[in-house]
Image (tube, rainbow, N blue to C red; front, side):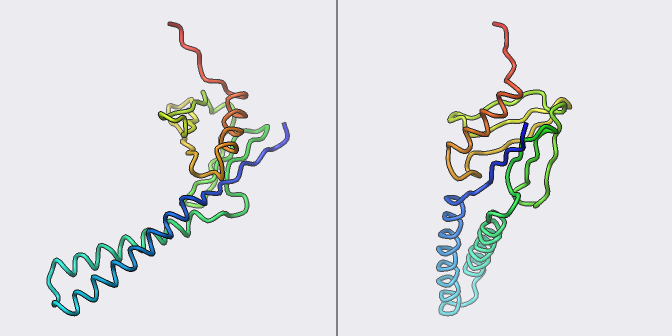
Amino acid sequence: MEPRFFAFDPRPIRRALFVGACVLAILSARALAEARNVGHSPLVMARVGLTAGLMLAFVFAWHRLRPRPGWGVTLSTRGVQVARPFTGGQLQLSWGQLDSVRRLGRQQDVLGLFLDEGGRVLVTRHLFASRSVFGELAAALEERKPAPRYDA
């Protein structure tokens, strides 16, 4: 099996985070202007702190979700290598560690890699550029490790 790489490219999520950060910047500026005009009441200062903190959280997430080389899921003869979106590290799983692979959720938009030890690794569809890329990854994983068939 030749290594296959499925890159993470969450453009819609990044756009939403950027727009949200811009809206929060405007709300922070408005709250600061109100604090300047009305005075430093606790409610106004809490609004300033909350909007500024949320804006910084949105900017942090927007920055961490940028596409990078080698950031995605790699399938090889050794196993599956999954990049972690926020920590920047790689999670290496051998085929022997994987018990099964299943699609989860109402819209089947989460791919669950269930481990023999009882843990699981979830890969969500929104991390990929399109549904077709996510579908290809899911099909390749399900081909190698099919979901268990339960007797009725």
